[in-house]
Length: 238
Image: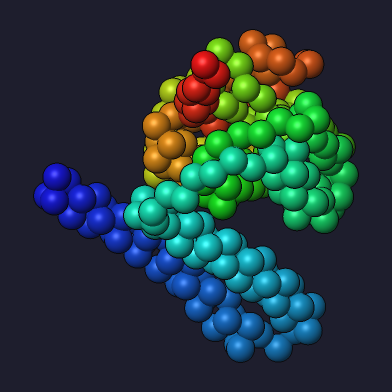
């Protein structure tokens, strides 16, 4: 078990180092170009590119830290209000959704309580929702959903984008998987958001599943990504 943990840590450090070195190298190149150019328009364009790269590097760093926490932090399970959690995540991501004119909503029955580590599950759901907002078409629809069904607790993110290639869907949750999905086709992503969600689901003795929206409770084309973990067994009153 110790050897397995050490091997996993080495892989994580190698992948994380590559991820951060790439971002830093790109930043250095852009700074060098800005220092050399005399054209104000070129300088302004480079500064905008630098701002985007810094945002990307910041997001990647935060995700790497979240991934490390999801692997090692002790679970603090408890009962929490699913609707409150979903609305909290939606409110935090609302500015980003508005930038892309995404209709971001919440679908959950009243007084639905789930059992798990609320902080970790919030991290997982936020990463899935952020992915959906990034890859859904502009003026698209993204919905956060919570339910208990068939002995499982589920937190899901539904979108009406073009979905995901079946080959990529089969590899969901692989760390540092470079993938293109939705309106982001042609762009690359580190796959860290899905890896974080999968790690947190597995810590709860569950898993992460992807399905076409037509195969799940969602209208029209798109993708449904769900964190699923066992519902607690209720003791019968005697």
